[in-house]
Image (cartoon, rainbow, N blue to C red; front, top):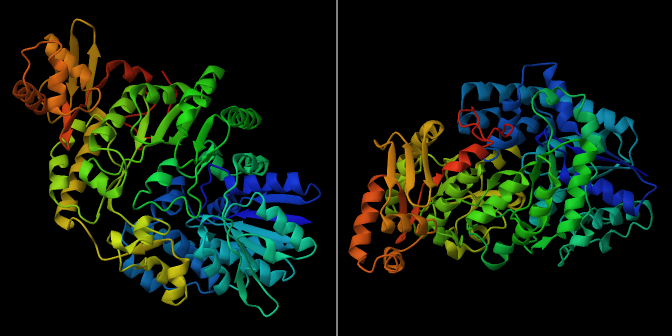
Length: 627
């Protein structure tokens, strides 16, 4: 049996497909006689387009990452799906906001997409595969459908199947119902189900027994098997095979854009979401249950892939770090002595020493789940952290040389202007910490509590407008196919949102030149400031009570609790006296206050020597070698 697994645009070019790498390994282990090829059509597309027009990595990333909520990448390939080079161009132009250059690129790629899909499908069909599988996540959907349609047209006997995040739950059933050239859709985890599917194709064709599979019976009716109620155990999650990716990347124009990275997973699900599912998050789809690979096994997998491909840049796709890894896998990785540069998603309530453990192991970027600095809004989200904890995370990451990626979201039911005004007023005190990348109204995601539970405030959901611009389907079908939804706006209005966005832009502009550091020398503490909003440069603190207060404010405190602890240093300390001290420090930008708590904002002075992030780079998350 010959199997071709295809990674279509707009999959990122500088990382292999984790899903297809895993499926290739799973098939090799369970059906060793099968021939499996992973075709990186996203990289083929880069080379194909390069011969026809000038497209840079930033242009590709516009579709792959930045325009996901607008659907631009899917619209580009809608012309190939519907055999119409002018497919809904007017509708696209009317609802698209952005630079004229971006719009022109969308139009040109929309014109070129059918020719690329035809050429790609011709190559695939000529190789006479028994099965062609497409992975689809976010803006790969339309490109995958268009290619499947052409392959089926050229070689009807080839079996086509789609899988991936865009096929989860009702989405996969809707894709199968509406696109008859897709023979099968596999929903959910594929390590066990996909080899079973291949065995069924080659033999008894007992498709009804495969959990999550969507197929057609003898009458042509679409049948969706129930998805598995049990997510895969860690022992069933295999390591990926990336050989096809690295062979292809080495010959592509894309290799001149960026060095390749490994993409790995040490866990699936979310341990926080099992207890308190964040209101807006739909990333875990059908399986929230947290599962983590044994630390020693994952470390062996990671080191083996790094050695095989000579790559030390690693993107971890885990939705949240296993906290046990902080005292197991990460210290063991640090002891290996490699200069890894890793990205991980973490929870923002980490303590200073835990952030240092990340840095010591080579974690240089984190997504810490920071979406607000208002404790009240965070409570509405059910995030389980406070605004002060989020600031502490950014401060400690800055001290450790770890970049924090985050966005400021608004539009939550029950929020009000005061939740933003009090925080925005304090933004200048944080200009030395990583600014938010985006300020935006939240989108409603399928599988999130806001989608599943209308009583939380979003009862009038409709598919995001991008889907009607892309697909020729009735609204009921779009509702099942869509991942993003719109509802009447909640929370703050445009005026307050604009003030937040303006203040964030000032933060982004000030960050490269801003500093606020603290050096604790035992008998005194020196603070150095270079933030444009504050006129002072250096401050020495020698008073024992004030030094004790600075040390205690490493963690958030309520003023009364702080006064109680400082009374051990000087019994004359009063709550009013502490309040006066905190007011003075707030005027100097040394503290951040929210929800009745106060936390120190100054980063560790020694941390600047550990920095591996360019403050003045066009992309502030651009990584460089350690000094």
